[in-house]
Amino acid sequence: MVETFHSLQGEGLHAGRSAFFIRLAGCNVGCPWCDTKPSWPMAAHPRVAVTTLAEQASQAQAAGAAFTVITGGEPLHHNLDALCHALDAAPSGLPIHLETSGVDPLSGRFDWITLSPKRHRPPRQEALAACHELKVVVGDRDDLAFAEAMARAADLSGRPDSAAPPLLLLQPLWDSSAGQELAIAHVRRDCRWRLSLQSHKWLGVR
Image (cartoon, rainbow, N blue to C red):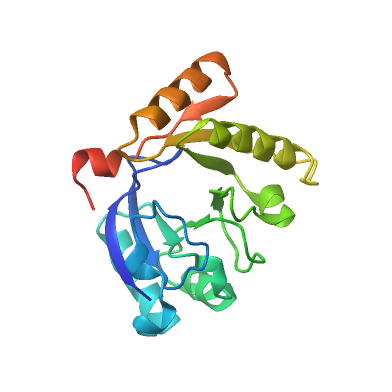
């Protein structure tokens, strides 16, 4: 595990809400713009008992956290069944959110799944069928085409009839004026999409 911390969710539908983050080590997706590259080498980080993480989640709830976010790295490189079971069994009972690129099989139980697919490593169909929000990073026009392809794939992914379609989000690549302009223009002309900003970076919040 890389770290745990209590802060504000900076991105997506739940941006601005108090959250407890569990950042797991390991990622072979290799996004060049990644802002958590130190998390990539799994062996460089210690193992932590899931009961310890559940205790920390309960402490975070007492301090005001509204939900737990499991992130990375790529958290689904790990089997998350035991961690989610421990979090569910903890006194806190906080909702559990997952942030993933969707390249690995789903494991664990989640109240909210944010799928952030990557052009160079497209997600599995099961991730497209299970996600609650589809968040695509935009740096150039090819990213917009990929975002539309992912939205179509989510529609055709075999989602349960009772499941609402995922919320569609475009997130400009950090410090990319071209990505910002493209994402804003696309959202303005297509009401299916919303703009997601990395508000924690703008505010200097961890």
